[in-house]
Length: 108
Image 1 (cartoon, rainbow, N blue to C red):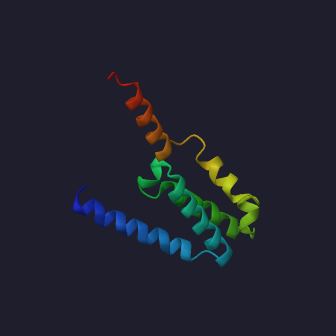
Image 2: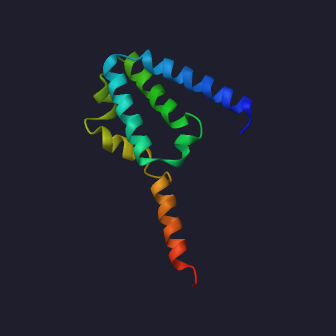
Image 3: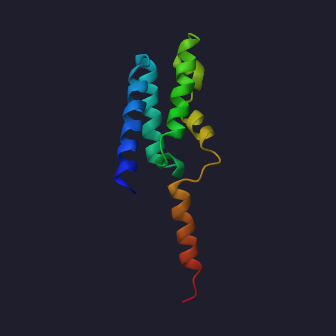
């Protein structure tokens, strides 16, 4: 990774964080929980920029503009909302599982 890429990535992340901080408090709380959940579950594309997280902020900003509460946007089961967003995404757990299967299938 080039230094310029790292600098641009940091700028993008700061702009993303500023958007989150501009949301109402209840939206920020739910966003932070979603972010923790994704970092724990580990969808692979999460490390490729802020695409997934930015999409959530877009959705939240739209919810705010329509006067909706955050749980009206996500539903009452936020974990299910998260799982639905990444249901077709490869996670680090999937990558690990594949490597274990490949390793066990190697001839000895």
